[in-house]
Length: 250
Ligand code: TMP
Ligand code: ASP
Image (cartoon, rainbow, N blue to C red; front, side, top):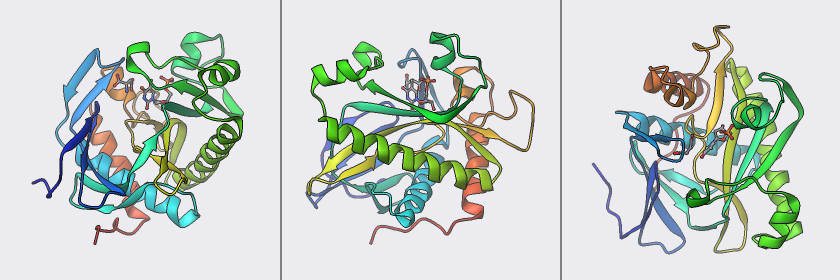
């Protein structure tokens, strides 16, 4: 059942964003749609929206407790959350602790290589251009963010990585890599936005060494490994095992 909401403002591949009474907030609905390879591959996965909403809520609350600024305000139902309205910066901020995915497809870097310090790359968020990797010079020409803002974004993303990597390690999960989006709220603050879920992170299970079984994220969908929702559910179970239930929006 959907809560009261205003107009649909934006529909992405995995979420819908609705206006609400408070002009500083918006409502996010997590969808069951799963897409990969710029939506060339598409399925409905029953239960995915609920699980990703719950995982994101719990992780955002942990970030908040750590003092990491983010857009989360509270849950309205199992698939709906209230967040601060932000102007989304059109960058996909990817942090990698272990080499895999596009990094190993596009370079001779060996799969599984530990990246220390973690590698941080910025991609331009535009599906019609397939989210191209940016260089510092390209970013400067594009003028999306100032040099100072870029440094602030990178510092925030590394802080999220340090914190989440340690947290997930305690529940026997490896944070391989992840994508963040950030935005500026109506008070001009830089916030972590979007979602933090197995759709946007690579997470491996430390409790098994099998190279397929250990995958608990969207790579199961990308690689047709099956058991996608079950894997996401395992992450949720471990996260909820050590955190309190995410708060409801008052
Ligand atoms: P990549 O290895 O395909 O570049 O992906 C790096 C990380 O970013 C991985 O955790 C998955 C995530 N990601 C997204 O959240 N959205 C995307 O569109 C892509 C390509 C990757
Ligand atoms: N998020 C992208 C898509 O939906 C790519 C991916 O996650 O693999 O197509």
